Every structure is written in C-alpha cells, then in structure tokens.
Amino acid sequence: MSGACRPVIGLPVQRRTPDDGLLSLAPAYVDALVRAGAAPLVLPLLGADAAAPLLALCDGFLLTGSVADVHPRRYAGPDAAIPDGGYCDRERDALDWAVLDHAAAADKPVFGICRGCQAMNVYRGGTLAWRINERWPDAAVEHMRSDERAGLVHAISWEKGSRLAARMPAPEQGVNSLHRQACDRVASSLRVAAIGEDGVVEAIEDVRRPDRFFAVQWHPELLAGGDTPAAAASRALFEHFVSACRAPRGA
Ligand SMILES: [Mn+2]
Image 1 (cartoon, rainbow, N blue to C red):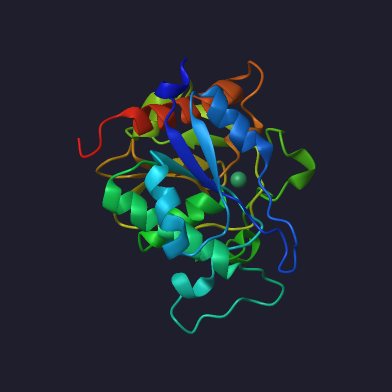
Image 2: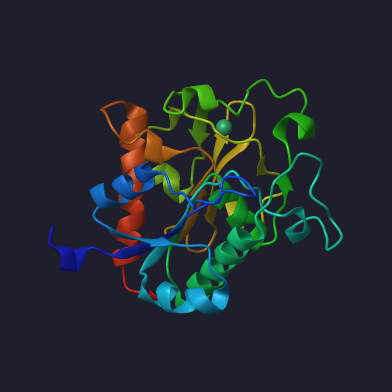
C-alpha cells in the first residue's frame, strides 16, 4: 500500500504516574495501526488550543488505554472526588475531550481501547464503575490480569445485531483484560456491542453511526499477532477502524 492511502490516526500518550517524567505509549498500538494500513500520529498531552492544529491533520483517532482513570467529576457530578488511592491525569482527560470534541465536529471516526472506551462512554453522558470489584462484588471474573497481558483470561460474546458483531469472525472469543473500571450506565446514544461472561460491558458502539464511534474494553493491540480467533478479531477491529477513516465524512 502506498503512503498516500494511509489515513493519519492521532493517538494520545499517557503519564503512568503523577510525577512520571516520561510520557509513554505502548508500541503495540502503533504496530497494529501500521499493520492495518494507517499512519499513526502520536499526540503529546496538550490542551485543546495547542492540540487543535494536530487534530486537524488526523483522519481519525485511537483513544488509547492509560493507567490514569477518567476523573469522576466528569460523570459523578461536579463535586465528585478521586477515591483514596486513585490516579487521574487532568491533562490526559483534557486531551481526550479535545479529541472527542474535534472528532464530533469534523465527523472523524474514533476507536477506543480500555480507558478510551470508558472516556467515550463518559463523553456521551454514561457513567463508570470506579472499581469493578466494589461495584459488583459477586463478579466471577478478575478483570485486572496484568500477569497475562496477551493471555485470553475471560470470554466475551458479541451482541447479536451490533455492527461490531457483524465484523467479527466469531460470535464469542477470549480476550485479555487489564482494567479495574468498566462502563456502568451506557450512554443513551451508545449500545453494548460485547459483554463479558460475568456481564461486564466489554464493547460499545454508537447507535446511529456504529462504524465511526466504537470501543472495546480489552486490548486488541496486544493480541493482534498469531492465527488464533482472538488475533483475527483483533486485526479485524483495526482494519474496520482504518477503513472507516478512509470513508468520506458526513456520509
Ligand atoms: Mn475484562
């Protein structure tokens, strides 16, 4: 594929701890985008004003995962505080919101992964479970399995009738799981596209334009190698996204 055909995909970095002196981005995101035919543009943590000229260069956005959780005041009321031991990054929140504002105004596709999925739900008016284990104490699955970053640690089912289900090679699959949070109330403009074996939301998509606004709670960029069904599904997600970024806007 020639470079001219590659859509430019903006993707934000993260700051892994409040005093981290390095911004970071897992190279698997970049690799998966390149393999799917895109040209990744790494976005440093910028406010909306400084980010605007960079966002304008992009044909779509991959909202990446992050150790930092979305600040609860964005979904639990203006007085909501960060629970003890929590970590939120005001600059990453600001960049994600700038990306989502720009994408909405310019009709550019957004694909969210992990925290990206959570941010997209909150942006549309949904809420998050701050800690899955506290919100649903009886949940049978441990969703923070950083010991198995590329392991298939729980099953998901794609929701019949969702657009993502139609793009996936199989109705069920195994996924990795590196999250402590999950969507709680899904925004009314979104729908659940995949659900975990314990009922936790594992993918969402826009009701009206599902090809241009969708997200998964797991990490397909870490599973995209190999020839397992989960690898095929992971590649299909990136290919589906890059193809949406090539489609005409406003269609
Ligand atoms: Mn999970």
